[in-house]
Length: 252
Ligand SMILES: Cc1cc2nc3c(=O)[nH]c(=O)nc-3n(C[C@H](O)[C@H](O)[C@H](O)COP(=O)(O)O)c2cc1C
Image (cartoon, rainbow, N blue to C red; front, top):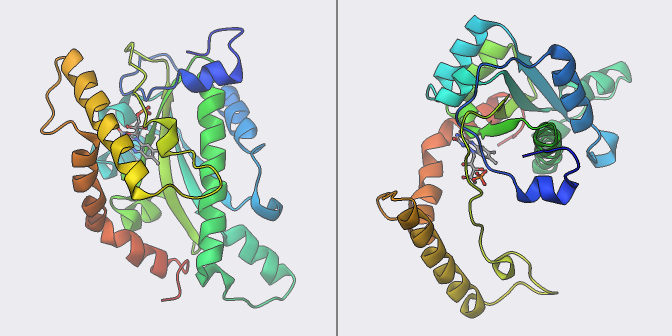
């Protein structure tokens, strides 16, 4: 991962999430470089509607890890970053110019902030991997959004979207197969279900084989079976909608 001379595409193709880290530290300078590279991502109208909170205090990290289901990689990470959608800065700009607006309550503003945040996050991931670090994003930061907001002192119009563990990998890890490109890349028009379904079924076989070859036996390894449980599982995070409303991201 990220060996000297690897092209950007090679770094991207070599990505795998890392869930076990050595105790090698990452300096604040390196963290700053990674986040700086992150901010070079395109950003809607230069709005930069994101904030990144680097967790350096041990107590604060434990508190956040416990809010992320105590995932081991959060505890072990050399750097734990929390990526937030941030319209607060833009509201300050409006206040400076005496403009009153309910814009943060619009779905469009939420999309702008979430897309901007995701782009920064992925840039930081690629930058980290290019330096030979492993990463794992942590969506579990949205398990208890209000408690995370309180722990991080988030003002209104700011919400944690994902965490990211960074560190030196203590595991070889493996590149996970993705869906056939034709299930993702549509030419000119979205494919019919008749074309899509066989591609999903083919991926079911790829996933089943991948787990079987590693002697791993999840409940039902077929991707469609996993997703048929995953998507309804989103309903468990109803507090995300509540927090978005409380934070002023959604007006209704
Ligand atoms: C926004 C986001 C949140 C994620 N949250 C978690 C998480 O909380 N815990 C975890 O172990 N992996 C998490 N992941 C990692 C995914 O499970 C992983 O990317 C996916 O299974 C594909 O595996 P790969 O990254 O090794 O290719 C997250 C990924 C994304 C993009």
